Image 1 (cartoon, rainbow, N blue to C red):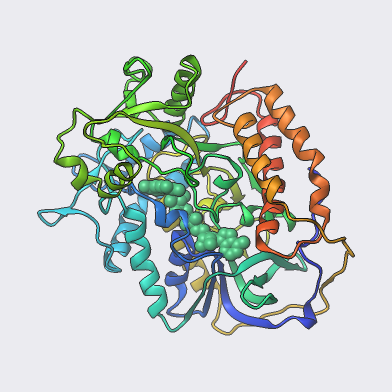
Image 2: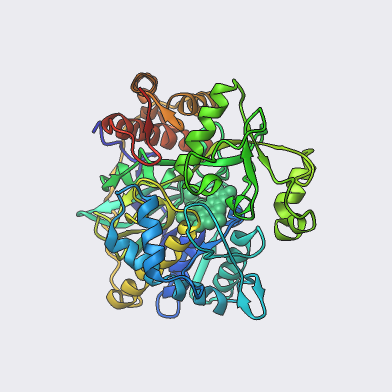
Length: 512
Ligand SMILES: Cc1cc2nc3c(=O)[nH]c(=O)nc-3n(C[C@H](O)[C@H](O)[C@H](O)COP(=O)(O)OP(=O)(O)OC[C@H]3O[C@@H](n4cnc5c(N)ncnc54)[C@H](O)[C@@H]3O)c2cc1C
């Protein structure tokens, strides 16, 4: 589309410490750790993460994991609901894989000791938007941290896996049309290291932080997508940014999510006049797919010139809320709202990137040696709108498939080829701190590329970004600035995708 960016830093490979591993995993959320545990009995694995494992979207996940386990459910029904939510853009083969392998993925987590909620020995299943039956496996309202506790425990106990937290992966190393590893900055020592591997699994998550209001952790700055783009890897569907309709309307970053499961238990959405505005808009009312609810919320906010609508759970049994949703209950109370007695202000927030690195059913990207899993990947299962609780599932199912393929195709200690003559010397001048750009970028993306877009707003965003493209031509020395470089590049790709899709579809709504 526009210039292919050089590496983020200048380097001379033969001067860098080189670490070798069979499989390099970039990212320590559900997708990265699942790939790691799947291959580790045979292959050596190095997992790299930017923050601690608690600073992942996976850790934040509340509602749960969709799987067709109930007596009144089936993979066919889960398939139908996923396809219906996806607004005609899902890849049916990928969805078939997702729902067909869901039960096995949940079993794997049970085997690893994940403490899902049970009643009389059977898994309790919750209901969420767009699902026609109850099928969401959960651990209270903190499913993500329960999943991470079991996956990370397994990773830490495994002799074949090395987990390195608090390092910043700058770029993928590519030679002879193959991904060979990655360049990694260690802030503690200020050093750059090269990691060389037979296979690289990109599992670096999403990009919610390019918006002003997001449910995503601070680490979600789209680094994985930007580094893939810089190496010419095929990306698609970036205009499909899912906004969650019910983030708590406060100034927190990230915004605290009030899970769809609360509406699943019967909570209403009401406007300033106290009217339930989803009734009559969709047969599932408050449990309509997320794109429809978010768009309706924004319309109500505009009509009442307010920055929020309300979640109304006052009619629900008061003893149920703190026990079924302890984390949400506690957080709301801490910021001054009692779910049982107060209307709680909520607003849409950037939540999930549907598009990403294009992969096949085994996570293979367009670059040999590079696999992608989880939110950074575009498997095709979400179409133009992701069904609630299908993304933890996607991370599990497709990373297990990546692992299964690597077990078949890679030998432990196999050849690790890289020409140490790889050098990048651009002589770029040193750039100033980009902290101010980060904030302006977030505001621009929210105002112009949000839930409801206009052609004019998108063009203004494109202009703003094109005017700042020159910032990518400077040399920076710290993670916060490299993140902004990545965010600017990715924002430009999102806006270009949105401009090229003129019709509204799923989460991409163009007004006028
Ligand atoms: C508040 C919230 C609630 C959610 N609830 C649900 C739910 O109930 N059910 C559901 O299915 N989905 C839910 N989702 C979505 C789901 O949690 C995510 O899509 C999923 O966890 C993504 O997993 P991942 O492994 O791809 O990425 P993440 O879990 O975000 O992990 C990304 C990893 O990449 C690392 N990384 C990124 N950049 C770099 C870099 N430059 N160098 C080194 N490492 C890097 C990060 O440090 C991190 O370890 C929720 C999301 C949020 C934010």
